[in-house]
Image (cartoon, rainbow, N blue to C red):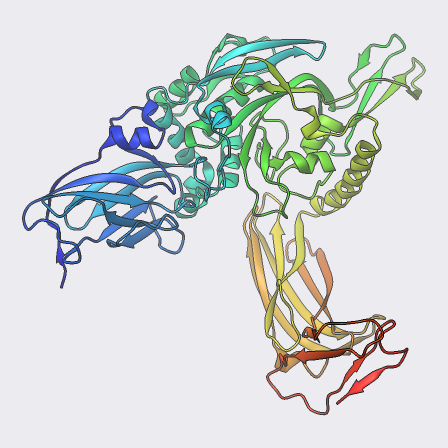
Length: 630
């Protein structure tokens, strides 16, 4: 039996590890490593020495206040022969002796933050784990050393201000590796309301940069929480300083961290964006600040900015819709496994508080490609960002007699979208990543699609309570499978509801058949912003005899709000797949020669098939005849 190693002391090798993990600029006083990449701890043993195969060491890692194996915030593991970079693992890399070099690796999807490592009975080690854009398994992986140097490691940069005809490059010190900044960034995560409400779930959520980006978008402003900056868009800066006075993020983050998380006064869009960039880079997410000139602020989500002028051409404030001279936000780099393929890469995320998203002042992340293509149903906040760069502007003249008329105007939004170039101080124009050329067929097509989808979203959003039906990936005849009623409470109040979820066979012309499965839940409780998935099991034994040859089942979910007496209905028809019939040609097919084919079918049903026959026909193959084989 293997003997447990008796550890006298250990060395975290912070200088070596931090340098190897590109975190040495944070200092070498504490261990700061990146996920999916091994790090080394040297163990000095009390007695016995290390013997391959004869020595054992149990290790446990934990993060957050409620560590759990299930949620990826806790793991226990022992020594193996070679590191496995897909999971928590440890291996000895030194020859037998009293000093053991222990290599430890986290999985590339481990939650970031502060971790505790227990070394057998020997002691407790603490370290910080960050995202790893150098690791191919990490969802923030970026395949360019030059870009990583710019978007993760660069501590200074340029933010564009001014107007679209006169761009003003403004230098900025992001300072993400300055003393105390990483601690401030981790504190931002710890102070966010989701963490305060459910710290265990929040710690698990930190494995996902989509989740973390959304948290940062909310926490860089202080509108709903103990966030970093208070915005002020007037010339009254009593009790603080003008946003123009800031030259970097370091002082802002230090002030917030050392003053009991009181908001720093004051910020405007480029300051919010710059601080969000500093925090994203500090945590290991590639990030850049972008500026959009003639940026639309669409308050009623109709993708149209309505402007009124008087008979002198002067703007008359009749609408909250506005066009900002410029507006800054950030882009974070990541893959989007929650969306269909093709939407990885740069994601727009805006920490300036403008409109609420899911009840909170935050915005994004949303793929730039979704904005360009007018795909407004994708998460998060696509309609708002789309309008910023691509809203139509309608201008009306308000006459003295009170009448209004639409006038022709050449105002365009979303001009010269700019960011600093990689490795130089030149401006990079990235307008083409957000939109097709103004007035082109593709741009109009994207706008038309976006406008249609936006109307559908508006109808849903106004409902307050949402209900939808989701289905399993494979619904094959003969199998048991689940379908789901997904209910969402988009109101600020808790809801108590009744959910009726049923299924019936249906023919292609809409005639309903018998019941295939049913569920009636009398007390479904939904907290504000909560989403619940309620499964309904579709058992073959239940639906088999009721199906028509159309293989159709009609699903209907009805949600009744006890408080308002309102009802919400979702309906969806599903088609059950028949088993695949495989055809294999035997021999080499030649013109005007007989052809032999093998036809196979695997019975997916839990009962035998009897009295079956195959019928085959094919153009220029069966002479117009149907071949029947029993």
